[in-house]
Image (cartoon, rainbow, N blue to C red):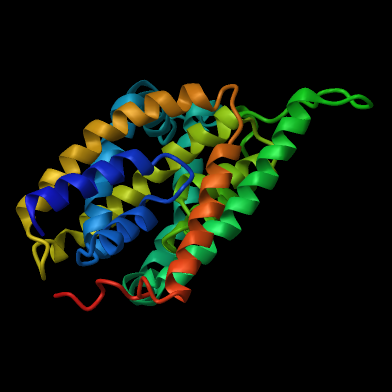
Length: 290
């Protein structure tokens, strides 16, 4: 991998990690369209450490408060009913599904799941799911001619059951094209949470899973055509760009619809199917590179 490739892929990772359009799919597609080798699951997981570092810094006050209260609640039973202490446990509980499935499906994640036809399918299907969830949220927020606006849940209403359901949604993102933020935000909206609450918990929930995945994949860094230098460079680029995207996205979701992302996902999926069907793009483009 050249330094230019690592710069572009790091930029793509930072731009797409927090948007509901799938960063892993875009890394895969960027390489395929450019005629580069598939960067692989290890490169993707490691560069995501950069974007998660941006999450940690952006939400540092929330994270510090949650960790502090959770740790104190281990020895002080009276603190176990505190919202921040409960959030600590809920993040742990919500991380279980992706941890179990990530290990179980490791070979599929690195192989069959990277087929461009599967990515096209998940882009479209999850785009439709996000669109439905977005419309339901908008209906509750605005009401209508014959119905009043409905109060949606916030993170203070988060239960163990909902935390696990969030975790299952996050685990779906092991398939490129699903999108971690897209799946968890859609799940949150369908469970009745506000846009801001769904996004905030989505970002917090991703931290343990992404960091664990990135550290686990460090052993494979530098193998094949992807060397350590470009990987670290891409991770730094992803961190810088990702921080800016978080700040923008959290403002965007406060009063904007997800429909632009829904339309983008569906159009990209259809275009990808058309290119593969026409023989312009191989569904396994770049996979054989060493």
